[in-house]
Length: 460
Ligand SMILES: Nc1nc2c(ncn2[C@@H]2O[C@H](COP(=O)(O)OP(=O)(O)OP(=O)(O)O)[C@@H](O)[C@H]2O)c(=O)[nH]1
Ligand SMILES: [Mg+2]
Ligand SMILES: [Zn+2]
Image (cartoon, rainbow, N blue to C red; front, side, top):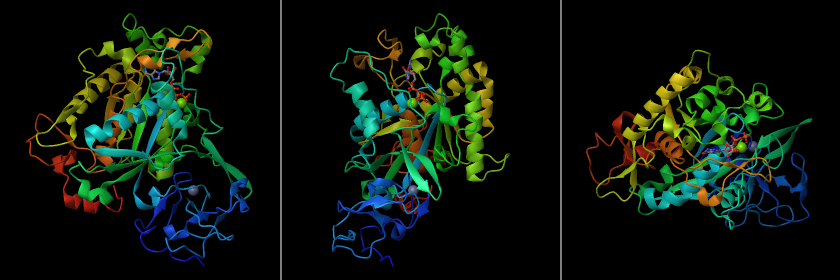
């Protein structure tokens, strides 16, 4: 019989969601991962993985003891047996989904966004962003190091296409069949000492779980029982639908003579034309999946926000010459952290929506028919056009040219919507500035200590 773990180890949340299979479970049902080298082999994960077990003995510090007497520290999900990092038992998790057609820029967006957030959150927003455990974000580190810390900044490099199988996935045996699960990226976001809500740290901190799917996984029929790789869509606090203007023939026509990006060139090549998939199809398919897995009726609007992330802004910026690319943040008097300028977000969203409405109305209509809270945010993950690499025949970027803009804005905005009290946001024009106050913009409500408490159990 499992014992209740000693206090202060796993007692903070009454329930956690597995970031691999999305099973909800109570902390006392979690499995532990054996440490003794002889205890190898797990019925769900195969011979190369350490055995998972329900403990009957604990060390004085509260760690389980495996059957060979070794102290263990790592925990696993009772359903899929994959490791669940410790912060997920202590800090409420937020799931965010990034979706979009193949080559629309999801992996570049993710890599540049996490890089930018790591650079700016501590100094500008008094927030600490950390990997939830040392190994989970390894792939993202590779992307970031290649693009931003490369020892050869002049050489063209490219992030590889995301595959639908391989080392971004785990194989788990469930009964008589095997399923493929996508590996999550996980971060903790916590207020630093300078943050005005630092005293509410326990209540307002969050673990963010994100996934980098291959665009193909969003095609109709690609998500199956044996490969439920996009089930996170239904749990997602905010959907980031990446729309790539360079894949739309009407956008490419509008950009003629206004863009040097090779992706904006007319795709005369038959293979190129066939390879491009209508992006409204991807969006409608994702909407169907959310409806199915979240149990929504056809006519029921989705209650959670959706952000249409319009990628590769550098390549189509000339279509909206009046929209500024400067950071949408401002400083409030006596406030150590910067504040997200909601007027800029709203005005930019309206202009981008109008542009999309005039060029590809079906995409706007599909999104409007689903989400009641819809925002359009343009981003550039690179800041410049990629170049054709003669060595590989594919597009690459020189690390020294990387100058992303607005790439972190969708995440900061999503945090103001789903994680109260972490990121300050205000309508600048109407801001009546008072020191030491962070406002949550929905209904112009102030984030107060009570709000932080009310949110302590992770309820949105
Ligand atoms: N101009 C411009 N090109 C970009 C930008 N971001 C990505 N690209 C280009 O878009 C192409 C695809 O980017 P990825 O991030 O790999 O696309 P993806 O959505 O992850 O694609 P899959 O992994 O196939 O689903 C690459 O050739 C990049 O050079 C950007 O901000 N600006
Ligand atoms: Mg990718
Ligand atoms: Zn699981």
